[in-house]
Length: 394
Ligand code: GLY
Image (cartoon, rainbow, N blue to C red; front, side, top):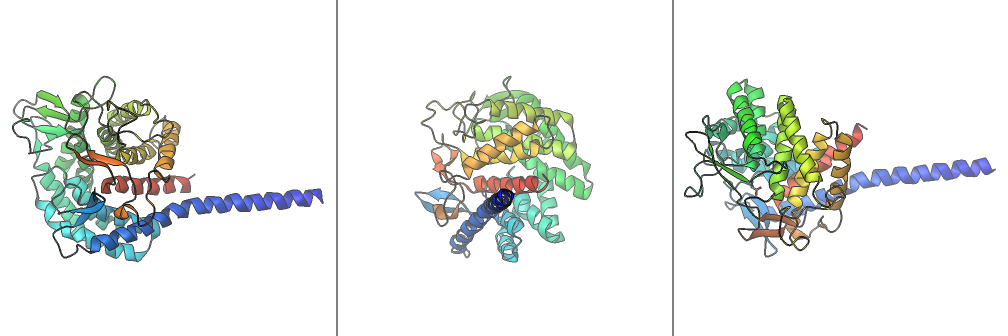
């Protein structure tokens, strides 16, 4: 009799924990797809205008952007990822609708943000449909991006603005645009694109980092000699501070470059950045970074959930390459749990359809402080996918 009771209890508790397990995973997917349905409903109201994608909120109102904005590709990318997560064909249709308006951007040589714009939208469109038209748009985008490469410097130029201040500014964020070059090189056999990406990453590794493995935001080069002229910030607290999202872009960028090239030096650089980030107060415990790791009034400073989401996505990937993988995965898991908590994750129909609350875009510029940002959602969705895939392979 006792044995029977024990078996019944064991079966019941197995049933419960199994049920819990099954509930946790679909829950977040169901929540994000419900919220994205709301987001699309709101964005659809601007369909006949020049505004192509939501970016953030301003005074709690939805703010959308034109195709030329650096964030224009993230919303389409988000829709493609919800398609990936749910397998529901309706998302594919919506993702295509929000991808196509960006097509002309493939020719815009006035920006380094082509990877963000075109790889996240048309790159995913090709990945999920196999449609060669989309592939050709990405290849052209990569060629256009490559026109900004200066062989004297060994880097792609980031910004054209502030020409009175900088001769040839390269920002750490620019590491992210190299993925599209690596992809286009593989697809076309154009090795120049690959060499440009490697040169940019190597030059960044050499000049962007301090002894403590934190990075500067902007390095200004002499375009004739390639010498470093200035080390500055634009969106961080000070030239010598560690702007949180900048550290996140670096971590993600070097992890990706290791994946794409297998070059050990990029893995080492990614691990050094991870060491810096994980040593910042609270990160190992899963606390979301403030907008700058050296912001003067911590803990009374705005968070940057976008930095956290980028770090989570990067750490999940880096954990699969590094001997420190277990620690990276654990920290990523803790940060992910914090992002998924009610403090950071919006409820359905809240925050104009964005997923994450509490990001900071450009505090020194006085804009996008403690708001939702479409790219925070992008890297959060990517983290959900990576987490799900890792759990599947366990
Ligand atoms: N690439 C611009 C930013 O991170 O704000």
